[in-house]
Image (cartoon, rainbow, N blue to C red; front, side, top):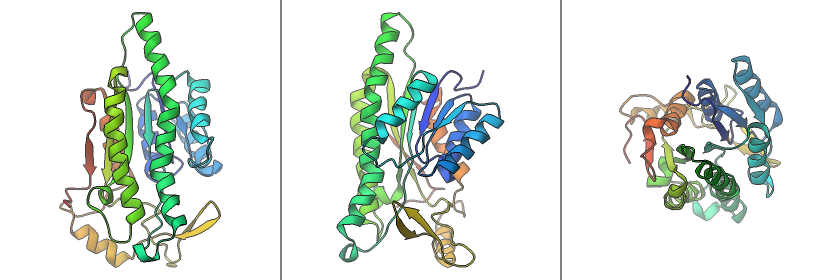
Length: 276
């Protein structure tokens, strides 16, 4: 039997990049997955890929920063699959500036997507998790170990020049993780964080024409890192390369497996051996 047979996972930002790999990995091991992306098309593409491989998935597109998103996301899992077993807060982007040039809008946008949105999703999930456990205990059923994995970054552990907003949000995720590990232990839920190092995604890769951007809520934000800088960064990684989305998904997978059922309130660095 696959590791996650009978379980339901909700994964934000899973239409593309790391989130897509996480969704595919969990689905490949039997989980039913609620796929989210800012845009409907990539979310549906991930759903189609899961279904083509024999898995189960539904899409819940939209911005994780919308005030009604968290409740809608959780309700999608309950309506489609009957509950929640795994929560992965992955969605995000960067909007960098040194502090003297960083606007309030820049600060708030990044805090909202990386910290406020996960908080709202976990708040919305609590009644569902609690009800599941109460029902299991009332029926004298085993209470399975359920999982929360919040995504952080080495920037949240050691800071990064030009990323005061992002580093602060990712540091905040650590505090949220540790608090919920204490609050939700009674539900047999583990809450952990994966802090990524340099992972190659559309946010780091510079297109051939050198002009990459993404649209976030009507804002055109530049993405991509200078290839020479990427090479220099990779040279500082003991494994000698940037990570792939599949590498990143593997780290999340480790904290969702039963072998990690007694691991909680921890931060796993997925960075190829890079040390701050």
